[in-house]
Image (tube, rainbow, N blue to C red):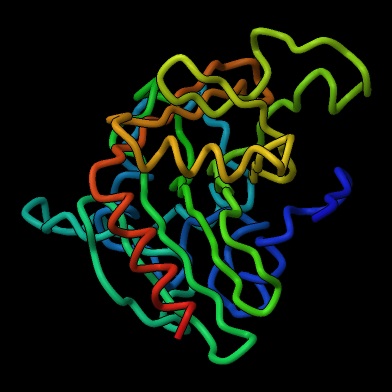
Length: 241
């Protein structure tokens, strides 16, 4: 599978075509599939001077009423999820299916357990691994960051050495470079996807996405991996049917 850096990751247009992430390019706030808890979390940040969310997203957040404080935390819900079928939940990971036959799209998705810095306003983030039956795609890893991120040095100038501030996916001592576009990210090297998914399914307790916002704020999103192996097993089973 060949990716062109000027384009969105392969999985993103597919999800858009299915209507699963309708708020992706304009920011996720206000999208119909967001849970009440996720929407509240977007409004709860206190440092507006560090707001890195897209301007359109900030406009949509104005005037939204905060839900009751006792609202229960809901499962990770991708925007537009009403067009997909929720199948199962394993820990923090949710399995969704859309379409049928060769057009079937299956994916495991989660929201971060912790985000740093806590005072930085951002839209909801999602990490997901997609399986697309008709295209023989088994391990496509993608991230919706919830804000625009500075690209890697090699993305700006091909051939440049990796910089410490480059966006990255981190699993234990393993670090994988990311390509970013419009608040989305995917692995720089698609050949590493199977390895990343294998490591996510092993004993690593968490995965950390590190980036630098356009305003120069270092960010870190931490995803718990408990239940991921079971979620991916179910995701593959669903797409094999």
